[in-house]
Length: 495
Image (tube, rainbow, N blue to C red; front, side):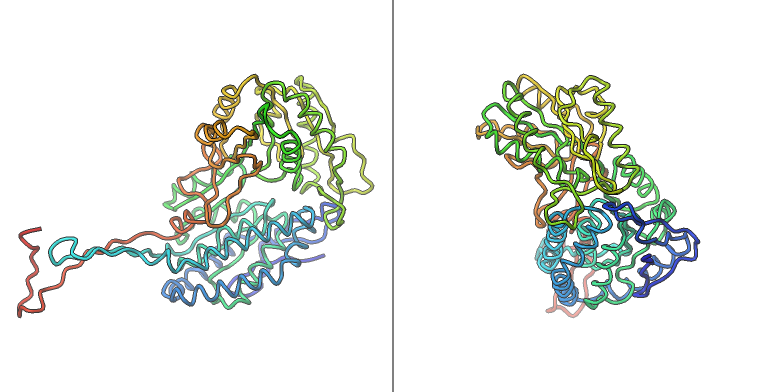
């Protein structure tokens, strides 16, 4: 089996903790590897390496940082297929989803390559008589990233390029469930020419997470995952004096108005609910059918579900792969049962689909007449389960979104421009789509929700990434008049 080790100071480091985690191919159910789980001492080793590297890296020219980022971008682009295949093997997502994940990651490297302009600061000459005031942006030091299983390549690329472009060093703690793709990305960073210690990787579980959150030499922590863990990371990290951005879970709603293009809405609902097996924080998990479009919309979604091809991610015919683990598949199945028991109409039952292997597969499910007090509505299922809630009007739909504790994304499907414009103001969510089901911003905007989908006040990547990974310093300077022979240190009388 493949052995996945840490990468510290540009060297492969085997754990001495004695703890390892299994790595599976979700499409077959077979264990394909094991990953070392770091001890506190190994986390300390990685942080110390990054701290030492920061002493030099923080003073490296912007031009050199950008050059190395360009090298890295080229290597990721050249190795797109290899990264995608590792994603498919350990996460299970189909090839197109895996390639799309890599492409979205490359966007963020490219944005960071343009930081030379963003880091240039400001200057005010003669803010007062003979006094100049200017700002510079400086790095924080050692930053850490704790990333999830569902996007093991893309999410680290939300963090690392921006962090190192600002002059920080970085310690990545990826998910232990699918660690090969992020490890390969760190190998590419080293190949691109980044000095040892600028980016380190430690695999691990809660022990590693807790040590990063409390380590006195870690200045900032970025996290993406479930809401309970995001809240824990934020509260623990900030209580230890760290800058923290923590993105949590979601329950994304898609409103469909009676005037919507039915085919467009149905296609969007299926792709957004079942793409990547629903294991993404921007998946549509609730369709809000307004008025008399409900029946034809449910019929159209069901028709498309029947044509969906579910199979191994490396099969080019597959449109949806397995779930990440057997336990998660069983948990998703339990939500389907709970929804039916609580009174929802089970239109399509994914548990009924039979697969010819022992992988972690489940079929797609559709629940109609779902109520907001049901567990399938309230909880983040993180699987291929779509709920349909019926309401009479737009105001009821907007109120439903506002009453939900999450606030990651929301979408509306309508032909009415006035209603769409009103929705972008009314939607209580950080990202809004208009006839777009998954409004994930491009790399030069920023990603993040509201309410229980975000802890902290800084979202991921884009301009917000620059703000998070650097801090402003304001300098006020006054020099003596060169025409005088004595230095007058007093402030001018007339400001």
